[in-house]
Length: 88
Image (cartoon, rainbow, N blue to C red; front, top):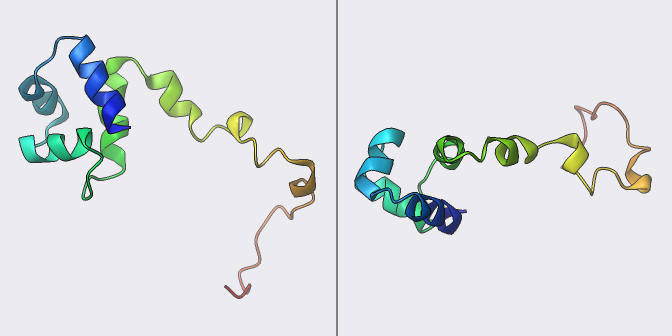
């Protein structure tokens, strides 16, 4: 995801400084983001992608319609709720 964010930034001719200020993060955090480094909060890539016009794609990530595994016929028999006493 970080590589895609970097490409989107470069295609728009934005500097790291401009992009990171808009996102409200430090240069170190932005570098970690573009390099898919550890320590980047899960919400940051989503927050960064929205101004680049990827809102539709971001919101489709967890869309029930995009859940190929969840649409499998053998999974349709699953209960509506999980068992709170189930052993893991």
